[in-house]
Length: 180
Image 1: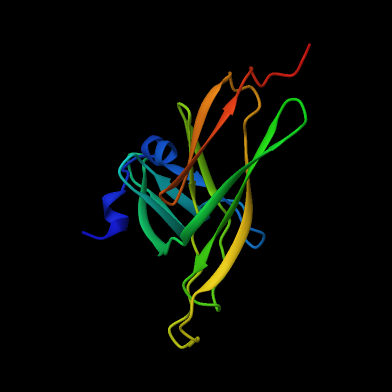
Image 2 (image 1 turned 180 degrees about the horizontal axis):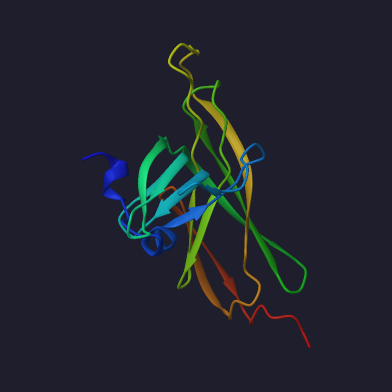
């Protein structure tokens, strides 16, 4: 069973529950036309696994469900360090400074996919792949990127961030609500 089949939702509701779309500069919006939904980039984030896909194709069945018929899995990057940056504004703003390595210098970091559930921010970072005829020197390439987190309205408490398996925490001493 491929990694893609493991995540195979059978309905639009299941798909929306599992998929967090994430758009990079070059990706456009998802488009539904003639019974086919095309999603440029998306990630599946579950308790058991994380995966990143591009060119996701869903076709509408006779019952109206959307069935995944194709997608290109992208490799996740190696993450070495996560630094949580809390901006001194109110409401507070949080971003992550993430560093790690791309597999080769000829690929690019794709846009982050971020999911939040019950005190846990899960971030999936993946890299593009080279075409079958492309070659590249086989050395790892360091990267650093910033990932903003949507934290407005969160109550006081400690939050965990997981980026491709590496974790960090941050704490709000008070509710992150604007004064009224």
